[in-house]
Length: 512
Image 1 (tube, helix red, strand yellow):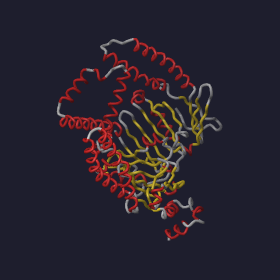
Image 2 (cartoon, rainbow, N blue to C red; image 1 turned 135 degrees about the vertical axis):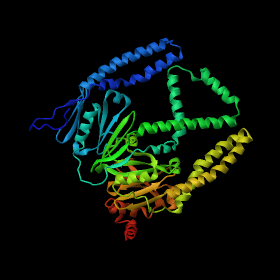
Image 3 (cartoon, helix red, strand yellow; image 1 turned 180 degrees about the vertical axis):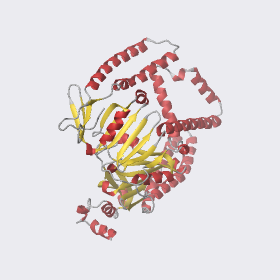
Image 4 (spheres, rainbow, N blue to C red; image 1 turned 120 degrees about the vertical axis):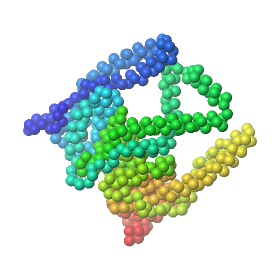
């Protein structure tokens, strides 16, 4: 394949088709129904009923229809790169040509599932400026790995190159970081999610789990033993399974991880064992970074890093593609964030928030945590049994100090500031996020308040950016300081609204 523009003057670049193995990729959907039939046959000793044969016939018919449709789509989908644009042509009855200027392409993501890797192909997704909703993204499935790499180079060749003497490798995997893998809430939640998924698969295959002898014997044994022994043992088993799963997912997701500047203007993340992923971000679209410290990971001294960048797809795709560092020591996370920004990570010396913000967090914790739980136990206790009344006051007695501590921790996390080119904000307790945004990336401001925050003299300021989560919050700052902070952080947005209002004098005094 040749993606470069032809050297012959006036000769248009030729169109290229996807690899023929695209047809085999589309057959991957058959794995689930065929696997379900296999499980059914194994569970019934090879006896397949009429319903299973009907299912098998339906799969065969669907395979024939979808293969025919896939063949037509493959024959009617092609692409090319001209001197200034990337064009994809598709459609059977209605032909559609999508053309994107090369200078608008910001990110190129190469993703290969185990099936893709088995077939030697990969999926290319090119993200453009303003494609956060997925509407501006061009996708090709599937290209050979060599063609995809060559096409990525061509698509990103328009970026403004600059020479740098800095180390291009920002971070690479260190398997000592594995100790941080279990420090997530999914260690327990993931086990129940996996169990629920397995139950749905078996139920869809006609296997009634509760009628299996092994399952009945296990529950009978569990109920016959002392609960004060079996419940802790069951919890330990869940934690052990969750830990093994977390370690396996960590290895699979971050195998061969490498974060590097391929040149002065392109940041690339490569990772994955079974499903490989290579995400490329143009420096001009890198609006900042997020240093994320979930509660358990923070207790272990760890953190993760995400990029705030445009062109990474919709919200769900952005969550997958924006991670540029797995759970790792916080010092490594700060170093990675600094290497990504090409400057020191500005997380020190942030301005604190007023005590009213602490009172809000305490009140909210009591109203949303302690009160509902206490009522949920007290009301049945009045109607049914006094035992639940005792559980209600014990719950209240235990939850109040927990809520008090969490509110204090959330309040101490609050902070904001302007450091050189960056606006910095920090908040959260279950997931403490420190966000550093380029000030010029802020496109708009939103001032949010409720009757309770207005009474406390607080407001939440949201910086809107065309990247990441679209908006980042500076929570519960004094209402009198918010206009001045917004005007100082991103000049040119609010000035026309402050000229005639009393906030003008406050902003002037703040800058002075």
